[in-house]
Amino acid sequence: MADNITNDSTRRLVSKKQTLDDAYAAPANFLEIDVVNPITHGVGNKRYTDYEVRMRTNLPVFKVKESSVRRRYSDFEWLRNELERDSKIVVPPLPGKALKRQLPFRGDDGIYEEEFIEDRRKGLEVFINKIAGHPLAQNEKCLHMFIQEPVIDKNYVPGKIRNT
Image 1 (spheres, one colour):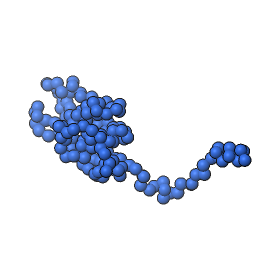
Image 2 (cartoon, rainbow, N blue to C red):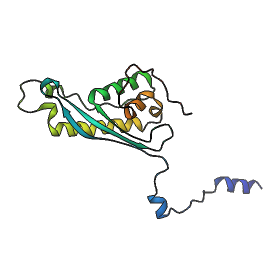
Image 3 (cartoon, helix red, strand yellow):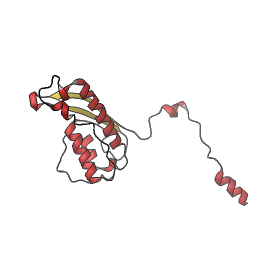
Image 4 (tube, rainbow, N blue to C red):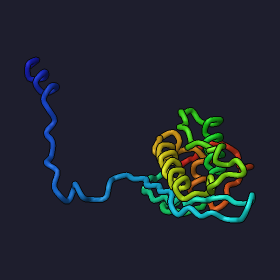
């Protein structure tokens, strides 16, 4: 009898062969965030670039399943600072501020050059996907506001999202 129990407890699980339908079906849970369509606004020292942040998900923690908002680099800085202050996660770095590119009397467009904007866009996309992919960060109000609300309320009360 004891041998029979040992054999049952150490026996391998029987796995089901994956079909093509299973392999190419929609994933059980997904969260896709793209940072796209950078647009530079204004003239002279009043110029700034913002980016479209598109989100699609079926995760229950997000009340909105698809959203699209525009965010500036300073908004990403705000999110990072909020998460560093209020959450228990290690927050990844943002792409650099490129202070040298902001100096006057440059022979180029500095931070408004297409190549720089594209590199920054890629870095911001990596940043937001690392954050949003973290299970603990997914419960933070600041993340939900950042990717779902058209306007960030910087006077919000920090806290966790509760599923109801």
